[in-house]
Length: 315
Image (cartoon, rainbow, N blue to C red; front, side):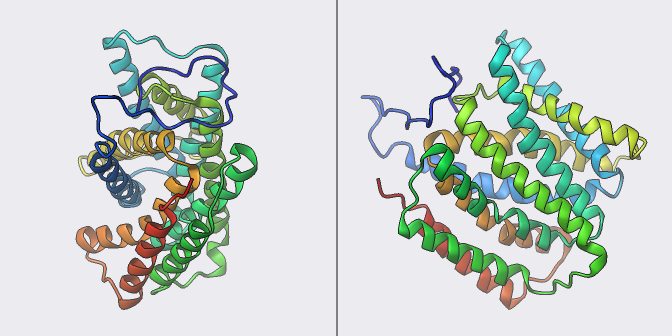
């Protein structure tokens, strides 16, 4: 992700791909770009695992507040050591709005949904609908073009997600409120990603993320204090989940997302999220001993094929 802010108007309709320098061959970025995509899927998937462990020791909004505050303070310290100026004025406001949507709305809603009893697989499924909702928003707002191949890939990816997470899911009426929170989180990341690309431009990866995370922390601090009464149990087993969610999920995960959004279209990057439920299932099998059934494996193959197809952008 470039360190320089966008020059000129912040209302540029879309970001151009970064030019290839004379010293850099056309295919030089491909291995690094592929690595960034794989890392994004793995890191984002691990958030469901760290969240599951973290909710054992803290209420949802309290856990989210601590996560955002630690991550934001860490980046703020890095910016101070590097003597980097923080965003101001309109840019500061735009970053705060995008951070509230992508961070506060999405992740606190995921935590609320899982805390209310929605299975982690179903939570991953709902957030995996983000490629469809983000693409629908990006077409009129960012004037992005979605090809027929991308549309087919998105449909195949959604089918793979449904197939993979349908193994063993039994949603009762008691989980409807949790489902509502997850839908709210889906709307948050969809709107926040489009807003980020539309108004925040080439956001500084340190100062910009610090502003977004601290803004998110302030937003979720209100229900953490007024509704939950700051419900947290600090133990040695809680620290790893909290630090992983703060340093890896919040800083590394969102940084990878924004880096890829700067180089590719919203629909192309968001299609990677179809792999998150299946990757989550693999991590759950390795870390929690959960079984990978045949439907999950079949869905993984179908979603992978759909994602590969959706990422073939024709310009």
